[in-house]
Figure 1 (spheres, rainbow, N blue to C red):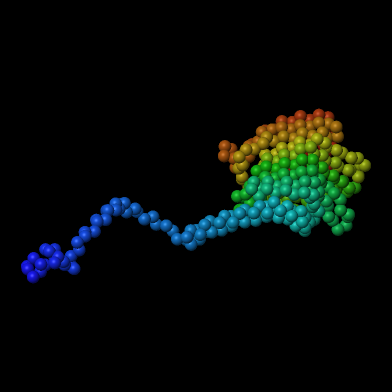
Figure 2 (cartoon, rainbow, N blue to C red):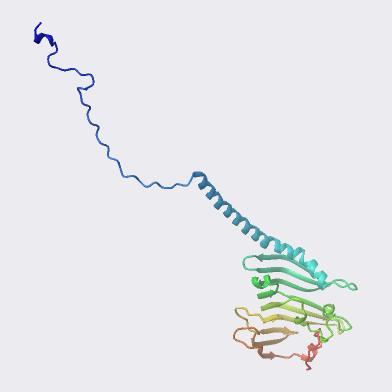
Length: 301
C-alpha cells in the first residue's frame, strides 16, 4: 500500500476535544437602571392604623351623643322631676313646669307654663305666680366656678296673685320671715345669700299683678307690666352689653312710666353705680299703694 493510500481520510485531522461548529453569540439584553425600592408598610400594619382612626371617630361620636343626650334629655328631666322637690324643701314653695327645653351647646334654658304655689302647714296651698315662658341664657364659665350667672333673662306672661288678709299679711309673707336681726325692713339682702349670683338684662313683658285685699274687700290690678333691669347681683360682673332700665304699667286704670340710664358696677368704663330716673305718673294715690308693699321701705312719702 502506498503512502497515499495509507491515509483514507486525507489530511483532515479528527480531534474529539475540538468542536468544529462555533455557537452563535447571544444578543446582549439591555438592563434598565435599578429603581429605588419603595418601602411599603405591611398589610397588617395598614389595617391596624385604619382601625385606630375608626375607633377614635366612634369614640368622638359616642362622647358627643352622650353629651347631647345629657343636655337635651337629662336636664329637662331634672328640672321637671327633681327641682320641684328641692324648691319645696328649701323654700316651702310648690314648683311645677309643663315643658323644659335646654340647649347644651349655648346653655339656653326655656321653661313653659311655670307655676308656684304656697305651702304652709296651717293653710291650704294657693297658687300665687304663673308664667307662660321663662328663658335664661346661662354663662358656662361662671357655672363651672359655682356661680349662678346669666347674661340675659326674659319672662313673658307673668301673673302674680296676692291675697291680703285682715291682719295685713300676704299669702307669701312667710317667705320674708326669718331675716337676720340687722335686716328689720323685710327687704331681701342679696349679700346674705350663701352663693354668688348675677342676673343680667332682665326683661319682663305682658305681665299682671292682682291684689285681693280682704281687709277692705277691694281688688287692685296692675296690668300691662313692662320691666327692664340691667342687673341684679351680689358681686361685680360684666357682660357684653346692658339694657336701659325702664318700667311701665297701668295701675287700676292709671298709667305709670319710668325710664332711666344706669351704670353697672363692674363695667369696664364705669367706676361705680350711677342712676338717672325720669318718671311719668298720672292720677295715682302713691301713699295708698305704698301701704300695700309687703316690705317696709326706708323712705317716707
